[in-house]
Length: 303
Image (cartoon, rainbow, N blue to C red; front, side, top):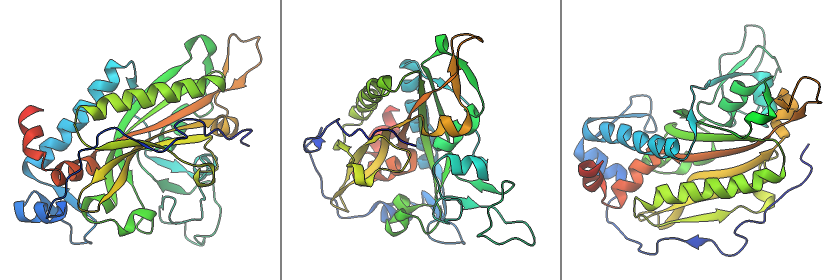
């Protein structure tokens, strides 16, 4: 149970860190179709794979973000992308809601509304990845904070909120860079949020694109979040800001349910750790944004 809801960072109007906004005539998916840099799958317009230099640029963007996170002291891990029912529920998702995660084919004789701990869900790189990695783990307090990140595919159900977005913005699969920090005390989560926001701002400034950091109001937070800040980037053809990342304090919501604990030694009482989770970037969205801002050639030459 969340004991407090904090929303005290950037309470003023969102800070637009770059004011140079551009309007272009073509959507990125039109550019992709004309350049033959993307192949739309036969199963639908929201399934795709990249071709040529755009496929190479995807890997280059991954390398850039991972390099910067390494420089800032985070350690890369290989985290799970498929999860059992108990972990999905502990992650704050509704296991019977088809918009939460892909549910693999249910067992014969059961229905989709049945709650079964043996069912498997596909969500990909997300906060669930770190929960599966740390579940039932006891960490020495001297080792905290623990800062890790992972890179992997993120899978969004077809009826999720992004279903109306055009082109790569509404793709069912994307490449995501995620980070997680475990802290000993709740008070340290706010400081960690500030540090991650600053680190992410420094990375995005290198792209010289219009973006802002927005503090999400309490009514829009998920049940497991104490506060969340979103990184939103300007999309010229949509004439709006679109989310590409976020930093959120989850507190001990997950650790109490999954027994992720810390103690100084075996004689001390164990206490649940506190978690700060970050969607550092969505690589697929970044590719579309670079196209819409006419930056593909620039980053192809320099990265």
